[in-house]
Length: 118
Image (cartoon, rainbow, N blue to C red):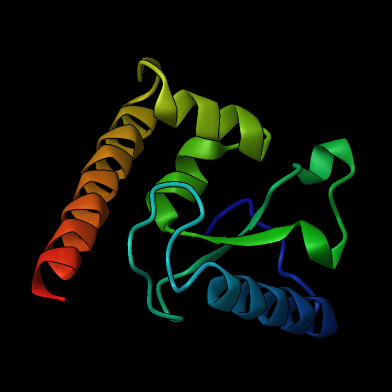
């Protein structure tokens, strides 16, 4: 992408490793909207933006591209609040909020079905 710096090899490796670890901890779902993700689809997102000092490995979460893009420089807590509240703002935040609500309802329906079948 134009305007993006190329991350040096060792930093790129630890970010990828941190993203993969986060993806496993998040049960292969986006941390924000809960969309199921494959390893190749997940992006590494800084829960605390780099501009605010969030540069350590524990600050990396796995997110889908739309959520990562919509979050921008917001803190994770701010973005999650935007998703769970009335979604106004950018198109991407509205899209991510809709996906979050759909995934939340789908997960609840699956749990109900599992209880009925069990």
